[in-house]
Amino acid sequence: MKHQTIETQTLSNGLTLIIEPMEDVQSAAVSFLVPAGSVYDPPGQNGSASVLCELIPRGAGNRDSKHLSAALDNLGVQHSEGVGTIHLTFTAATLAENLPQALRVYSDMILRPWLPENQFEASRAGVEQSLMAIEDEPRQKIMVELRRHAFDAPWGLPSEGALTDLPALSPQSIAAHYKRCFRPDESILGIAGKVDVEEVTAIIGELFGSWARGPEPKFVTSPSGSKRHHISHDSTQTHIGIAYDSIPYRDPEYYAAWAAVSVLSGGMSSRLFTEVRERRGLCYSVHASLASLRDEARVFCYAGTTAERAQETLDVTISELKRLGQGIGEDELARCKARAKSSLVMQQESTVARSSSMARDWYHLNRVTTLAEVRDKIDALTVADVLDCVHAHPAEDFTILTIGPEALEEPREIS
Image (cartoon, rainbow, N blue to C red; front, side, top):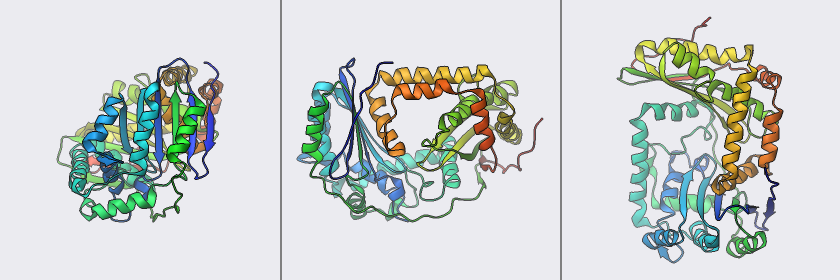
């Protein structure tokens, strides 16, 4: 991998700017993280961040919704807006020569959104339709509910919102969420591509330098849900969600924890796929992933099966999670490393991936990791490292949720 030059600067108002020039591409990408995610939804108003995210592109600066879309289209900008637990994320990619104009459009969206009242109902309806789609798809719903039970509130609240809370929202409450949360301090702007650092830095200073700081918004915390929960659903299928504690991205042992989960669920040769699905034929889908907040993390597992085989699926899945500590093969770790290196190569070729990765790194680590640094950490992993991590953070104290016709019993040991 080529040597990476990454420039970071914090403006006087607290906005962090991260720039990585990439000489071998013709594009440039922006990832803007604003601390206005669902964790800041007021009590009883889960969905405020989602509706705000829907409203922001509906007019900003001197452009209404139609002209705002046209401005981005005319610049060839591929863009998306998303809601996370902590941040609203604005991502855009375009030809490098069009980046200055695109940044001007985004400065209007971030600093001068209209939040038109006559578009509020349409925005809320869009969020409502997305939430109803989740309700109609148990495979999605169980992971949303699993997070609610695995993390304390508000970190476990659905970033998408809650159907029961949407009626409490109003144009005024959404405008208040924007005013309370949109601030430069704690906002992070990652830019990657064929860019000139000095030129881009000057443009950002011009566009965002006068953005005024604001007080840090507060939120109310409460304990997570119960460790065991069943949602009755008249179906021939049962959906199983399992969560347990792991270590966050900022922990020095993170890559060992990542490798452990990759052994469990990193492709068609992984433990869960081969044992639960292929050898025993218990389910049609099974996988696991590592989800990290800044200070804590969970492994989330999913299995979808028939109601008749649900108990056995739960039993075998739990046993496989526990069995990981008994040993890992060198071949299993080698496959994990190969998958990771492929991902790094693709990230090296994607300006969107790099801008997003840099912004994420800064939030979690207060610095940016280079691709070479990540590669070296993965290369250095040994089976002993991964097993030490598994033994220090074993799969135990599970949160287990099910959706299906009948609740399941406590998992039983499988030999």
